[in-house]
Length: 61
Image 1 (cartoon, one colour):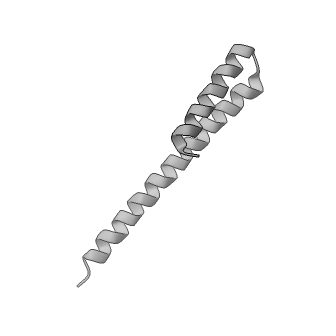
Image 2 (cartoon, rainbow, N blue to C red):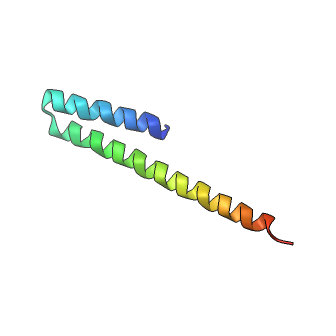
């Protein structure tokens, strides 16, 4: 599942939890959103590291 889908799913859970008064569901929704954000950040760092690695390899004689 993509990060965007996880964020959306998390937001739906959070809102549903707020509407129904289910604190556990609301908390799960916030957790799902946080996990998606961490996953995106890790992916971005990996992409940047690959870019740096590739630029260093191209610079070799």
